[in-house]
Amino acid sequence: MGKGAISKMQSAIKEMAGAINYHLFHNRVRPDINVLYALHHQLAKTARVAKRMKIAPEALEAGRRLREQGFCVLKSTLADSEVNRIAAKADTLLTSSHLNVTPATALSPLSFVRNSLHLCPEIEAFLEDRLIEVLPGFFGSEAQLIRTELYRLYSATTEPGDSWLWHFDNAPAQIVKAMVYLTDTWEHTGAFRLIPRRKSRELQRRGFWDRNQFGALAAELNDSRNSIVVEGKAGTIVLFSGHYCIHKATVPRRDFRDVVVFTFQPSFKFLRDQLQTARTTGDVTWAYHRNPFTGKPMKSSD
Ligand SMILES: O=C(O)CCC(=O)C(=O)O
Image 1 (cartoon, rainbow, N blue to C red):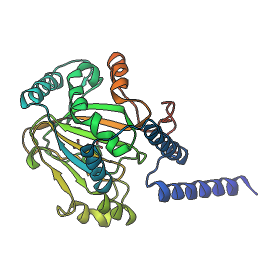
Image 2: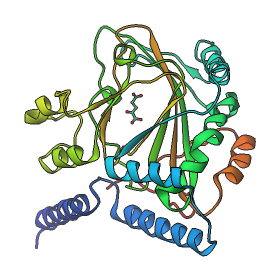
Image 3: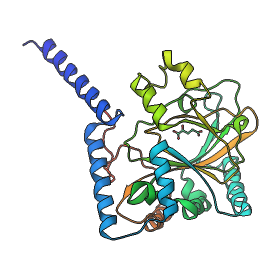
Image 4: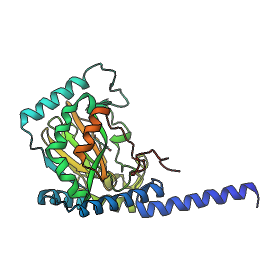
């Protein structure tokens, strides 16, 4: 067999393996990473059961909603004055010329703070507030914080690409995000939009994956009857699965919108105990494609 034929066969095999992986895991993450995540999750759940730890009924209920619909909205129990104090600190940082603040541009009307957990430790109050208690209700195990993002969406004259387009996160099924609004957020001030799990899966089965190629499905993606516009006052927490739910950012028509987004995965250890390390080492800047057992980066896809 000639070299050309061998390389053709190799790419056909690779394509077939990719298709099987997509069919099984509904993402384009490498199969070994998906399998490791599933195994890690099962073991973390077993460890929690073995420790006979109870999960509060309210956390179980939030976990059930998150599993069934792919999202759930929680209200912070922090006092308004406390939420305002955290939001004011975030505002000071986001509008400063600090080295770790990346300013907005015309193509990307978003400013963000790198090392946000370190520079704005006040945001941890949202973890203590609801998330530490609620996440085991979803995972059935402890949770680990793998990424923290603090950013502001500005209004713009054009709708940019990237996160402003309908998309799935190319992440294993075990990863969830918690977006906490730091400003009162309404439809016209850049509310987060999401298509619940069942409809998202239907659109995926019918061909939606690439945010730049929605073709015949554009009308359905943009039909407001299919999506949820998450509105809420500062302190509203949107827990969602970017793996299961198509979602997008929206350019505010007025003002701006500030959020902190925490990304979590299952864990064997208490979240509270891991935070002590995060506080001393600065931000937690994990990407999705890591070995969940060791934390070592793995090539994202082939
Ligand atoms: O900030 C937003 O509204 C969208 C966030 C998003 O697309 C994401 O976290 O994947």
